Image: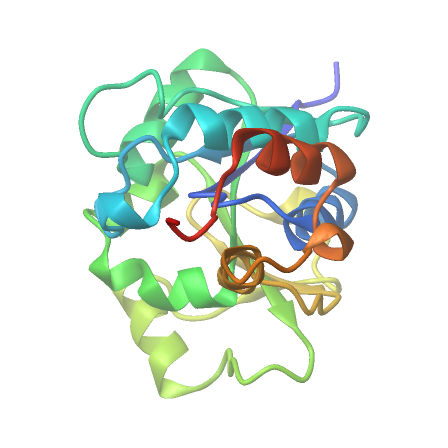
Amino acid sequence: MAEWRLGILGGTFNPIHLGHLVLAEAFRGRLGLDRVLFVPAGTPPHKPAGELVPALHRYAMVSLAVAGHPGLVASPVEIDRAGPSYSADTVETLAGDWPGARLFFLMGSDTFLDLPTWRTPERLGAFATLAVGYRAGSTFDPEGPAARAVLARLGRSGWRRVPPVAAEALAPGECALVETQPVAVSARGVRERLAAGESARDQLPQAVAEYIADHGLYREPA
């Protein structure tokens, strides 16, 4: 039987937008993933609570966004767990929930550069291959000192690039660099437009835009 390949894409998803879906599909295609789990953070330790809508709203929006996308699934693993949402704990939990599966922890380059501020980021590599989405033409330099410092913190000397390295050859703990398409959308930008009373429907899945409108999310207080 072929090995089951599971991607894990975490974040606050405040809110989830089209860029998140494009990134997940890029990872799924390039890494040959059978499924990508979207994991909304329950209580993210790096984000002030006042900046986030409640976790159940964010999970509901993720569930709506991935509906109709085969292979993309919302996971409540961090919302169901009490206390701060530490990614290393989440990956360890999912490794236990999916015995025998190959796990890939998926992230953008900005998240990769933030890894030294996380609690025990080196533990991620004990359970998963780390896959970093890299947009050609962005300011992220995978060979620059900032990226090299993070690789050293993770105990890696360099990248495995996909392609030319076949995804099947990637091992847990390795850092895969995956080129993805640029998407000019950010959750902060969406929130700012909505707070200003503007529409962000061009940057959101339709069901998510409708959910936000129905629940009055991201509006400035009257």
